[in-house]
Structures are given as structure tokens and as C-alpha cells.
Length: 101
Image 1 (cartoon, one colour):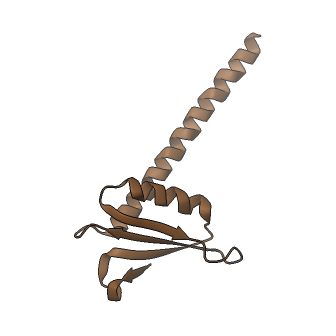
Image 2 (tube, rainbow, N blue to C red; image 1 turned 45 degrees about the horizontal axis):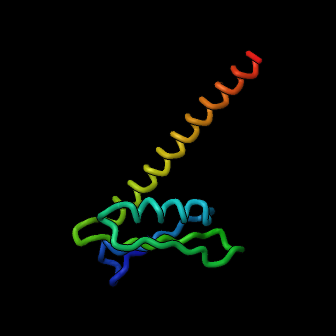
């Protein structure tokens, strides 16, 4: 992570994720932009042959970017858990219907 404005502003930070790409970048940007405390969120994958993804976050004064990123990642995890649960229920329902046919 690199803080902007001379490295002292906890509300203006760039994070670098190793081994991640557009899949996480776009989902995290979306979750961050839904947060009313976030002024700006964007991501880049500098080059396809390099395993890095950068996320830039700027928040309202007095709000730490770290907290917003942690919340965004937790929200992504919750959405994934919900999708998995919903999928598993649908598979079970489908299997039951197939047995009854």
C-alpha cells in the first residue's frame, strides 16, 4: 500500500494486490463506490504479463481508506457466500425434481 499526498494521508491510498486481476479489481471498485464515505475508487492492471493489480481509494476527510477496503472485501465475501448458498439450494432442488420425474 502507498499513501498519497506525501504518504501521510490515510484517506488517499493506492493498494497493490499480487496475483489478482480484473476479477477482484472490478468487484472491489464496485463495492467501494457503493460506500458513501468513498469519493473515488479505481483500479488498473498495469500489464497482463505482470501479476499485479493496483487499487486507488480516496475517502472523505476523517475516513480511513483501509477501513473502506476491508469493508469492501468483506462485502464481496458475503456476496460470494450468498451466491454459493443459493446455487447449492438450486442444485438440491433440481436433483429432487429429477428423482421425482
